[in-house]
Length: 306
Image (cartoon, rainbow, N blue to C red; front, top):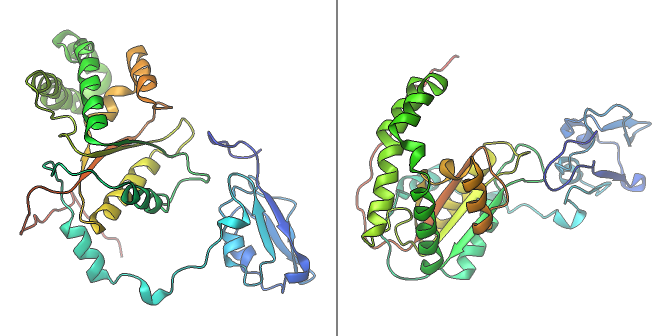
């Protein structure tokens, strides 16, 4: 049986062009499904794959003679491309510089983000690694300040009808079920966040997404690896930095639109296809302010076992 995703539930088809095969075995070495074998100095499909071809494309990408093509699960030979020359890759110092320059930006100039840049950001985000192909990451793109602000207003109206979720009686009732850490998080962060979002919006101040000119919501499907939307969103932020755009992750939206009938109705109204275990809103725009200094961050712990 093929591994299911929201986009396909069938195995991909491996086609072997024996006349091109030299029997080098590279394809066999990279296929972790054990779908391939070498027999009589030619590659063959094996009789005992683990799951059936998931269309990772490794065999097609590694073959030096184009002896293998994979079709299905959204993959085809047209998706193979030549890698950029290794001499064009960024150095560690260049990459670290890019990472260090990126910071959370919430003050934006009133300038739209060009469609061409949005396309390039999404193209870069598509290269993010995933749990299983094809990617089950979905992206809602809110292009333009009007669209971004409309989402924020709708979200605050939605929160107005969800105040029971952070009421004292509900938090008291749920504490034995979700534990001390969640109880502290809800009392110290989620409950005040409801008030901050809604009260500020009533005063004409948008603290949901800061009137950004562009927002993207990365989310998964019931089949997706929970990490996939987060990794894709991270790639999008780094890509945006190369264009001089500021970005900010918004963690307060996704968890509040996942559960219950009202959340389902809100998602449907916004064009969000699925509830998702993990997801992330990211806002983008040209920064209004310029920073000259960064802030050094640390991990909670690092344990190296050598």
